[in-house]
Image 1 (tube, rainbow, N blue to C red):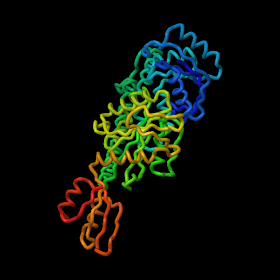
Image 2 (cartoon, rainbow, N blue to C red):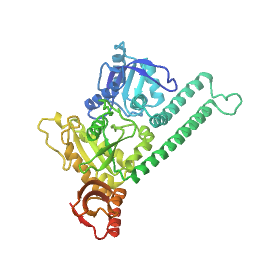
Image 3 (cartoon, rainbow, N blue to C red):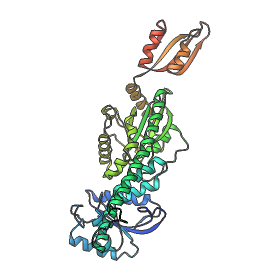
Image 4 (tube, helix red, strand yellow):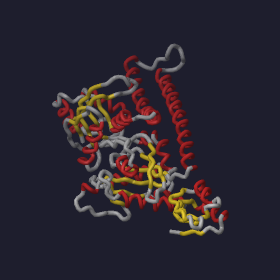
Length: 439
């Protein structure tokens, strides 16, 4: 499947300061090609100044083959590209093409050729904001640089009749460049490990304060950030209608119906056939999900491939070795129901909402609270205390006090608290005569 596209501001390799202007043509080789074409167009439109010019669907061979498709289709594509004078690149919507295939196609068409890996990687590069995201993208670039190096060395060897040693060092050019790449990769991994340890420290601090952590996940552009903004009321959050608008783990405070404070974690979106190396490079960020108390899975229920998107998200979560209890307790959210006339739930226990318009948010908060109380072992209860004793100060220190109703006539108060099982056991041992009112 192929498209013409107009794209610009493409940064490649170590020419990070160079901006190259492109017109691009795209190729797709997956089932349900029209939907895949729509997603590929969305990928291109995510990049500023990239524009799709045309599209075509053509049967393909194994992507590992030298030219991906047969001679007849190759000729059709070549003629089509030559007739589009503004085209300066072609996008093959396959996960990866070899450096040899890339060179063969570029020589034949006279334009740049991109695969899914390089396009998604460039989107990531443009959207990265934090040091950690930039490091993860640099790590994901290493396999691409190795592949390009192999191709460049092969061309050099053909031109000069074999490898040459560098300045009597005993190393070939290939060996020197591979060593440099290994050193760069090690440096990046060490920097990411330092950031991982820092994030672990912050996570432990949140746990000491007993803030439940809720990871909000879903297919890219399903409305995760919009939902978190609606749940927290955080005005600073600015959702964007584009793929991979969020690359960094961000935390946002919110409250559940019982006034329990929680932390919502916004995560990177997923994509069908997201290149393996990109998933691998972001695994350090995604490991944060494994330490959350609850996962909220947001789905764009209006998308024609919403079931496939759900399968993609669940597959990635399983590959990340997310604990089974998190997968079993997951809250599924059907977002954008306002765009469906006479919406009918297709799955049990899914919560239907419109994050943009606020529909169904109270029901969602109640469901989240119910799950949080179960998985964290917390209770909501009311206790009668004597104001002269140490009960109230103990509760403020060891639990989350929600309400205090003072009864001055007898020097007592009713205190509504959220308390963990362990703290509740300590409270009963310390204050055995306290009257406890379960909800």
